[in-house]
Length: 310
Image: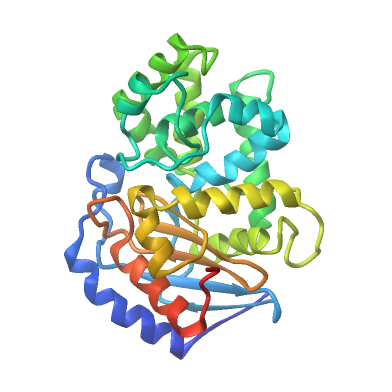
């Protein structure tokens, strides 16, 4: 795979980097508190040319965090089927924060509104097939490895441990859902798998390649082998548009207009159907948990290249 610097992309990254001082890193996860909030990098995997352009330290690794939600959703639907997954998790966006418990208490039946909030993602991870937690985690890791063409993809154990030891609200969400039959099994085992999936490490190029798979309706951009069935890729991209940028998804759809999923590490996975996958890392976050400079990069890229799907 050819990967080279781009003066045009670097100019965009340099301009967007001016906004990093306006945000803060995700200090509520101890292992993420020490990153440099002024970091910003981006990679674009172009499908037509089968090449990648980058700006900044595109090989610097970071944990996926909530970006993992959309990837694990694709595996869960393959494992359980569309009807089963969405029988337990809804499809509607929410105006609440990603870790809110309030909608679980007021919704009837009491199930998460969508797979992109923490409650929904925990329920989805609980659906992954496997005889035990080790097998489930192995299947998630192998699936993500296929997306990025890296069999050795792994999680940052320090980040996973940090999240596991501080996941009190996620534990509360799990026990509430267990009470209402949304999840089954041992909560601690589920949280072990979930915190590991959130701590899977990638760089911007890896993320852009995963985006390229979704951009190509689930096919590997180099071999054209099916990694995700096209109908499942469509569902994932749709939920990225409606729910992928937390409770800023509507504003993002207007200003940028492409499927995207963010994580509180500062990563953003973005997809331009039939054109490219985009990976961004900028750990300075806005109040909604999105990379403040990363969103600026995508806004400028979309406006310059007319990427909006609307």
